Image 1 (cartoon, one colour):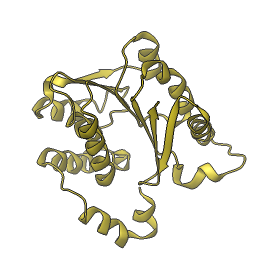
Image 2 (image 1 turned 45 degrees about the horizontal axis):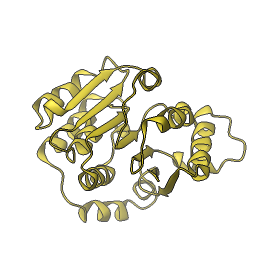
Image 3 (image 1 turned 90 degrees about the vertical axis):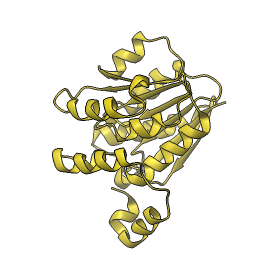
Image 4 (image 1 turned 180 degrees about the vertical axis):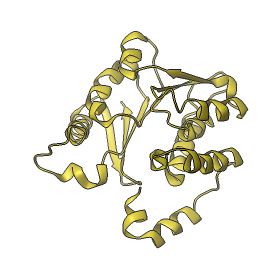
Length: 215
């Protein structure tokens, strides 16, 4: 849920009304996510989807990594900007829900460019030697700081990393948080701001997106 969606729904509706429209496949996927999942709020929102689409189309990446597939909405947004010979690898561990993103991936125009893996992201990052042009992280928040450490060796100059939910519904302002996920997000935000190899900015979009670019 976004800040405006909760505090000022009229403004949230205005923002959506003044953003470019979704494709038909994204509309169907968003609708089915709300019909068939118990936590539909986990889907990348309409506005965030537009952000991911525009960034990917600007970069035209050859290699994208997504950590946290859920139902595949963000995956399809990211895939829209892939170079003709590009590929997106998307990782998740939820076997019970895997049928839903698979269905939409297979019917999308990017079917041959999406590599959906049911695999732990930390294990994958330790095993692969691939470099990525664009990385989107929206998975288990208690591992955010560790993801950053593992991701960095897989970036190069110009690589962009996006971490979702980095404002954590305002919990990042807590001085002594007890929740591990809050602690990890705070640590990630500190690491990102202090790492001289990156430029970064936290965008107050929905629940906050930490936008990093490797120098």
